[in-house]
Length: 345
Image (cartoon, rainbow, N blue to C red; front, side, top):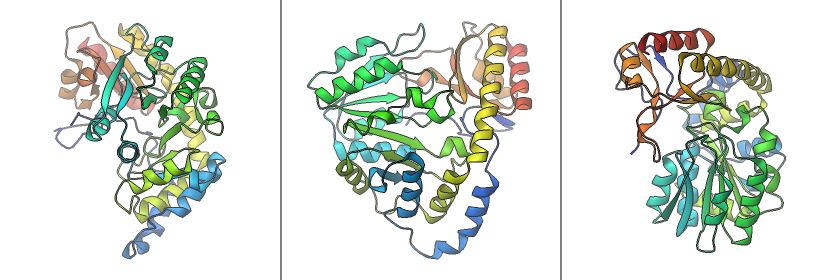
């Protein structure tokens, strides 16, 4: 299993974790209250259909509950979907989230990697050449993790159209898209009513700072696919406390908007400051920043000695040593990281 961000449990003397891309504001008061009020319900089994939270999600996205399936985090939805569909052959742009490969491999799928150009780490039009009749699925991470790059909206349209013509399922991971400056421009959600071959992944973990709860969901206009995905895992996908907290999250617009506003400014600050240090920084779009160092210094280990954990991206398919990802955290924490990097480099 690949190393993930947020693995703090075997790190000694850790002070700040920049490896996990989580809202630095922490749990909102509304979510905290919802969790507290739901404690008395844990003596009952949770709703296996997750109807309350599905209705909340449907209202939030302007769709129907039958178009939504919830799971025990975004990763659970990935595994449920691949287990339900069991694609024979899938295209996966790399580098990207390791769980795509893991889930596809477990379902017996042949994986065709599309190696993203390292000049700007953006998917190019040549990916269209890979969408042939022998492909069952293409996975798109928007924005991509770990690179933070978005796919051109015109290219997205062509990918979806060609995939539809060739009966290819488009799996779009949009777990970070709500943190971008213009989510509507780059999301494939606007296509789901026209095309039934789209499945969108969403996560509550990052925006609402609840990775320990495990809560994610998928959206598709193909209700049969949604139901098949729901049935492909164990019957109680979401515990009652996570469901109650999730319902509160959809109503927590003030918390959400405050974070997005803060993130836009702090992300730009960090991007510019990292460039001043001499790092090759790729313009970020979400709550994390991807950069490359040509210096032979092992930045990961040197920062860890200072009690700072970042994500070493050398284990991603398509990447080598010298690539790293950091989360955008509170301003004072970000300044500590910047000073540590200056000392190291």
